[in-house]
Amino acid sequence: MRKLKGYEIQNSIEEKCWKLSSYILSEYDFRGLAHPANEYWCIFENKFKESFETIFFKELIELVGLLRAILDSEPLTVENEVYGVDNSFGILKKETGETLKLTYREVCNKIIHAISYEIKFNYSEYHPLDNNKNGYGETEIIEFKNPKIITQGSFNGKQWNAEIDFLKFIDQTMNLPIQ
Image (cartoon, rainbow, N blue to C red; front, side, top):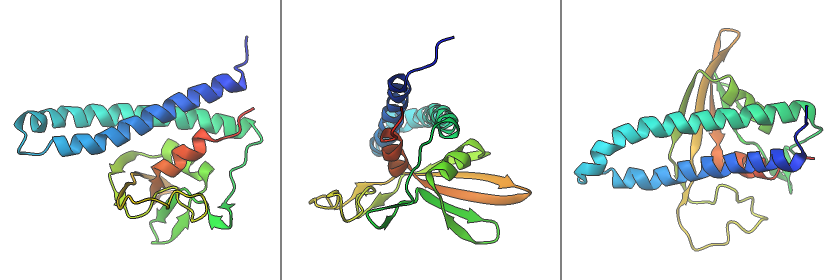
């Protein structure tokens, strides 16, 4: 049996990241086309939305399964702080009302163990990857696409909700130092 080489795994991860990013960013545009004033696209949107979500979450779960296998077998670390700036990848909201910042590994867990998924097509004034040190904020653009993945599940009978910063998660995934 042949073991996959690091570059083969990295290629597979990059392909899934590009697919997921393309799917979600094109959905922003599709939502504009599916305006009620455009009868054809409005009718098409209902079928498209169901297919989009099915394909998107299938690809996301496959990617995260691969990532967890790698995280469990490789000595990879994702820093909790970069250049002195928080490097969390989302927020966990517990049934008690408590909120916690999610690490990269915890985001993977919240995707794998979720019983429901949703995408929020948010916009923000700031680039989602900007940390005031990397130059992403130096632009004339005034509105950025900033999708969030919302997952829900339970642990030991207690409900949780996770809000995952999709672009930050994908950016980190594309830059994992896989051997």
